[in-house]
Length: 119
Image (cartoon, rainbow, N blue to C red; front, side, top):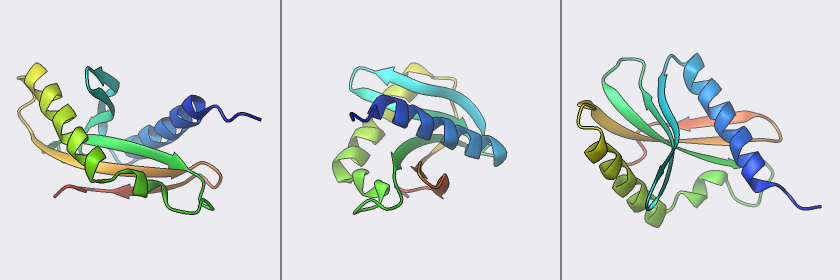
């Protein structure tokens, strides 16, 4: 049976958004498509001080390696470039920025939120 990775990814992002909302983040945009890729979630942190670019990685808790391992140096560099492109198009977004990573384990619904992963 073929796994519908797009649907699983969407479920993971939905869980991540629910997690952020429960933590009083304000969701600004989801699935921001840019020429070089996509930003999963753009949000404002609960203090209002940071515009947060969130990468969501979904997997199963019993996978051979954790989902966050997919957020390697190459992906991090790309995510910074995506954020720069996003900010260039949104000159009114005058907040400090932060990069977070959320891993969602779809089999157990366990969510791990790593703040400031590039700090």
